[in-house]
Image 1 (cartoon, helix red, strand yellow):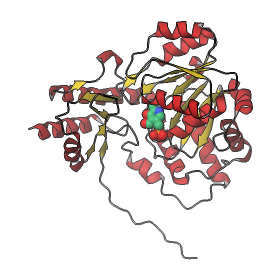
Image 2: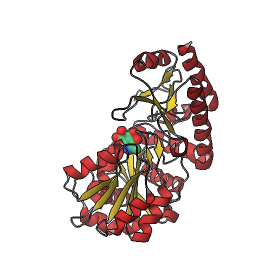
Image 3: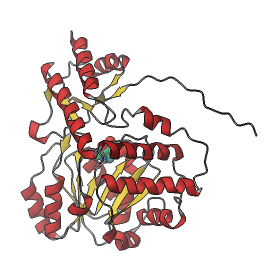
Image 4: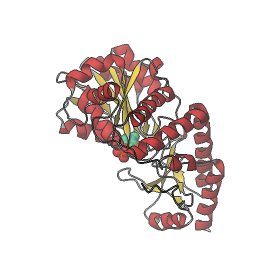
Length: 367
Ligand SMILES: Cc1ncc(COP(=O)(O)O)c(C=O)c1O
């Protein structure tokens, strides 16, 4: 057998991605995807996926109370999987729709005939009293909240919303796509019922894998309420536990990179990662304000993960984007209806010196 002793190293330069994931990843995570070819049905690979599940529970402090189902899919796959697995015919879901991702879940409910109502509109700050009085109507069994609304950069108050739901006996579903791994949370203490996220956001892995973390107490409902074949949360979890493999082909190399990214996250510690994110965000916030930009949100509602900045119709976003891109920096267009914005996020293996470089290059553009 002719076995090549080593791979040729390809030289790649580091870029600063300020789009909200997939972000800049470390060399260590990049290299972790280069492994010997392996069939994903081998036990060795099964162990990688089990380690991923354990690592995710350690990151979210859900060990002992929660389980994880992995899907070869983008984040929206885990979102859809949760929605088609968690809700029964007699359930009624309240979706907090103060941004694009809450609105996306409304569309999923419509597609699958899931009973639902919505509260709030794009950009609204959540009114906790209104949530409380709406749940007092007594018809809602579940509430869905997007923790960090990546469309506006707003951090919704997860702890307070969860507390209200627990008081009223309503189950909580959390889209933590762009916060899980960077924002310290304790799934066991909060008693979160369902949370979903993906490999390529705040854990700094590659795209291709998403996951649903569910409370063990929800297992019976998940078994009874499933409506989809691929996106069946309970079967996906059970198959890995019993057979040491996923039901369908997983993204093998993404999994190797993801377990490395999980180790990296645990080594840094979620609290430290949060400090790094907020420090990075503050440099961008101050820097862009000094350049004359106005943030879309009030300071108190800012996630400290993403910043949406207002621009007027005379501002040529594409030209600004292209200038920064040539300098190794990627910024992201806005999605807020009827308001022109662009976005910068600090999701990724990024450091204060990167942020200072961004501010310097942005300043150069205007000079
Ligand atoms: C809060 C939130 N939910 C869901 C998604 C959808 O994830 P994906 O684009 O990986 O399908 C995103 C993507 O940015 C997001 O930020």
